[in-house]
Amino acid sequence: MERPTGKRILVVEDEADMAALLKSRLEVSGYSVQTASTGTEALDDAAAQLPDLVVLDLRLPDIHGYAVCRQLRQMATPWELPILMLTAMDQPVDRLRGIGFGADVYLTKPFNSNEFVGTVNMLLAQKALRDEDALLP
Image (cartoon, rainbow, N blue to C red; front, side, top):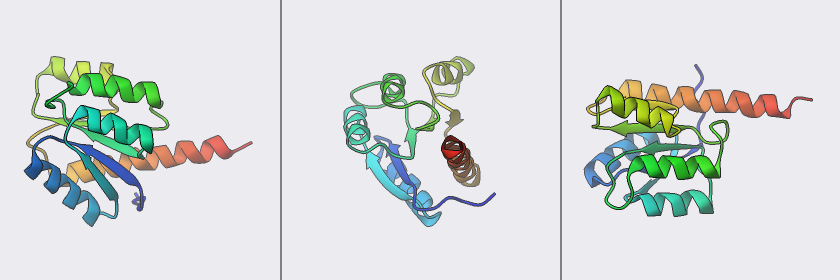
């Protein structure tokens, strides 16, 4: 699969080391990455300029990630904004809630770096195909 580059990704992660790791891994893969350490900051950033994809942790210091996801879904449809939840909450009920609140994919920590980047690539490739289809008569 060809990797779409130059896309803007918003990483919402309150742990600085994890945010730096995710940012580095995505930038090496050709993406432009912005980070937010709180749900409020993420929502403000997304309202100012909708990213191409959001990587969202659930345990944030101000607003739970499920609520952030729901508010992001009010800003944009899944076709406009893919959301990848990446969290240590690994119970089946957590996964179901994440998808129910609007996440496209739910990955758990610890995670495989190649699987993470591959999932980002896949979500953005699907978005690009939908964007192309929207332009067809």
